[in-house]
Image 1: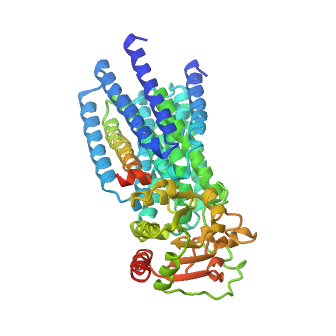
Image 2: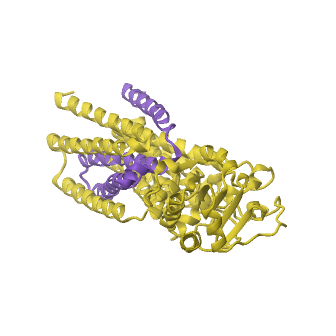
Image 3: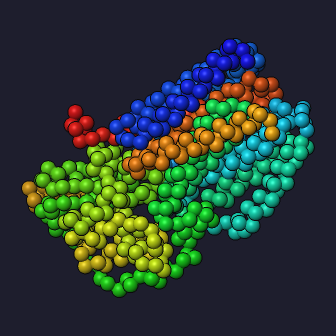
Amino acid sequence: MTAFDTWVHLVYLACATCFVIGLHLMNAPATARRGNRLSAAGMAAAVATTAVVLVVHRQITAVAAAVLAVGVLAGTVAGLVTARRVRMTAMPQLVSLFNAVGGGAAALIALGEVVRHGDLTGRLPVQITVTAVLDVLIGGVTFTGSLVASGKLAGLVPGRPIAVPGGRLLVVLLGAATAGLAALVVAGRAEIAALTGIAAAALIVGVLMTLPIGGADMPVVISLLNAFTGTAVAMAGFVLESSLLIIAGALVGAAGAILTKLMADAMNRPIGAIVAGGFGTGDDTPGAAVSGDGTVREITVDDAAIQLAYAGKVVIVPGYGLAAAQAQHEVVALAQALTERGVEVGYGIHPVAGRMPGHMNVLLAEANAPYPELKDLEEINPEFARTDVVLVVGANDVTNPAARRPGNPVSGMPILDVDRARSVIVVKRSLGHGYAGIDNELYTDPKTAMLFADAKAGLAALIAGLHAYAG
Amino acid sequence: MSPLLLADLTVFVLSLLVGFEVISKVPATLHTPLMSGANAVHGVVLVGVMLLAATTTTLTGYVLLFVAAAFAAMNVTGGYLVTDRMLAMFRTRTELRK
């Protein structure tokens, strides 16, 4: 190893350290931004160092250098423009899109590396062939899987679970074909053709895997796909013998795995069942375990405004309906108006509210809600007993008391105990079902009043009512 | 197994453990930025694409290289920028008053 190579290795080690410390700083909102910037600085250093390596080693052809430069430029522009323009409500689909291209790039590295070795057929070491197969497989599944997830989140692909006839059988067949092709690659026969075949199979499996998964399961799915990309990048690191890629890929793989587990636990559903799909497809027996014969009490905007104005403590429970209606600014304005009147206001946020882990927190932060007021499930549940009014905006299944009883689709799911508060106001367009497809017993609770309105319009009317009637 | 592969495997497993340890304490408030930030970290795949470029000499190789370079660059720049935008919004009441 030359002195230059030693230095390069040491710089890469420093970059990897930046990634770890950067992620560590994300433990608290006060230091998180610094952490992300440290991580970005490490990334910039890694890319710059690699550029120096390319120049010093003088191996790269002029054409390759030009292709690389143009490709990087195109990608950078695309990344900067989309990241700058995206609305916070559209965040999940953008993160999913970035995840897709990352996985795609990782898969292409293995393909490119094997194409380069093409003339060495049969002489590739096992550690390259095995990891190349895994890289192409995982990266390919992630690429199309994340694209479909992104399309579902953006509404380009229907969010409901889409059952593909014979889909599961096809996945099994493709899996078997992949195993056969993988054996060919490892045995050193027709590597390029076989690996291309694996890539094609992986792309199809990615689509088949994501289509049957329903919108409510998206936080779990995009966490899982994030973990996949990390693993694919680590495999690319094995193929290229780059410890930097292995470390960074493994870190992301671990992060994705933890989030996936947290999300699945928050829905009380095994990860396997979510990936198998079909939540809310009609396989369940909707409403079977729900009493559902109670009557629903409706409330006018004015009455609701007065009730809120004279409460001592109000907890706002936002859900996906808030994001869909883009009502985050209205809800925060209402909270501020109440705070100015001396009402104690907090937010109770379920871990899977929204379309990606922690989505609600980002939306409310965007609308200038102070983050110490955003409380998670464990923090807020003991507070409901001393809450006068809970305002539920666009959340459904995560407030359904039926979850405490066995025998229905939401059984065992940790919920926000809003029914323990003195009264509940639900802002909702209709009595429609959530993703679990069952009646919400909260709506027939005598303590509950329904305010039938779109979240944005309803909240704006509440603010107006607050000023008009409670001055 | 070659000593090199063994060393790589060791690094992989230890990094996984470090990842679990570092990330398991992140509060729910920061789950979206964490995921987006982690998403940006796997943009390190750009370094891999650059290493691949050093040895690319065929037309097929160039095509793969171009797509991979564009994908990776989009992942890494977009990922960090969007995470930074999100984190800039997380403020306390006193910070908001300023």
